[in-house]
Amino acid sequence: MALDTAKKQEIISKYSRGENDTGSTEVQVALITARIKYLTEHLKTNKKDHSSRLGLLKLVGQRRRLMRYLKKVDLARWNIIKTDMGIRN
Image 1 (cartoon, rainbow, N blue to C red):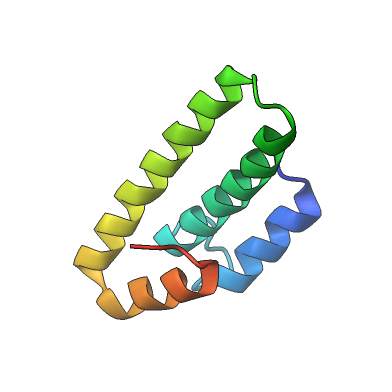
Image 2 (tube, rainbow, N blue to C red):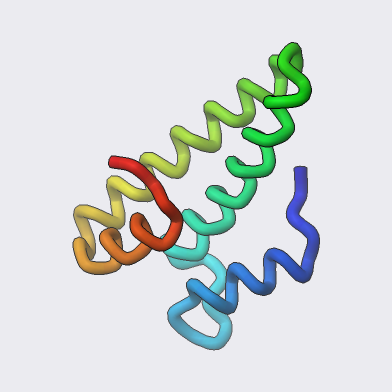
């Protein structure tokens, strides 16, 4: 699933740290979270879609690694992104 351009630009503008920032950890976590939410809703209606379930688990693992890195580097930014996105520990 690819996010549409408008939604992606909205997320990037909200969480970016500069004008051309598209790859910072916060932006990556926000984009992955949006994809996770989409796949979660998709799997509620399509229970037997195992390939999407595997992709969801990979995204969750990738987001967990990024959040672990962010926590190690800057705890304040980690707290902000965690509360904004509604991510549990």
